[in-house]
Image 1 (tube, helix red, strand yellow):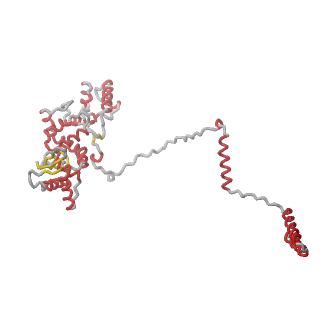
Image 2 (image 1 turned 135 degrees about the vertical axis):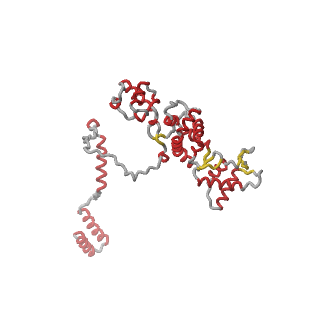
Image 3 (image 1 turned 30 degrees about the vertical axis):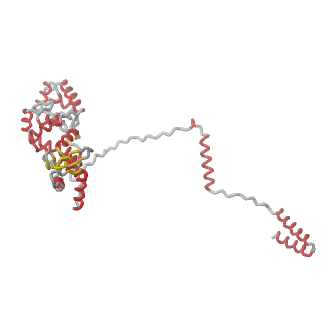
Length: 366
């Protein structure tokens, strides 16, 4: 307000003066005077909270560089005192109605026969074996799980015999699976069925065949379980059709190493005949289907394939015949996978396959 008042006075005095230059100088001098006497306000920037935090974090980071490493104490985890639970939690078991027992096939293995073997497999000394038989111990399962104190109750069994039994039993069990097994040991199976023969190798002899025929029912039951576990799931995975040669190859893979599979199958056929494959449906010579549904599809496919051979000398490229069959089934809204068609034509005794000079497969009537 003072500045404006002085300016008005200067303008009043200057207005009475005729000299225009003097008027301007008077007004200008009044302005400069006011400017020199007014206090100067300095600009101070406002610091935000983020800048303060950033400055403090930088200071803490740089402070780490000056820390003496020797003065830093290592971090140690405090061990909590162990408190024993007075009431241990017992494992929960499902109610029997809630446990689904789907069979050995879905477990991928079957119960081992090792524990059912006779004691002669341990090759015990005659006195020790005789004492065990007198006490009613004839199989490995009768000894598995016994302790030293249990053997002391056997009448006539010396301390040296107890050590012999424990050592040989422990060594034998280390090399054999006592529970569920994913391999077949036919030698063990034969020892279980014929404990009196003391078998060490498998040979197709009249004596062995005659002895097994007396145990034919038990043998068939064991073979049906083996087929159910190791053969049927594999056949289903392959499309449902299999030959006897392929079954033999499959058994060779799931048998214990060194087992003469061909000799064993020959032996079982002499004893049981074709009942060993009774779970499969025969569809051709030494060819089987996994069930009647696959059998019906196989016979329908072979019947359609024969209709293309209107003369005995007809010959077709194999891939073309497959394509024609796929088209014909598609027109009838039937689905036949190419792998199933190829397998059926290959194993069928109604057709013969050969290769021409260009190594292309052709098919004709057998």
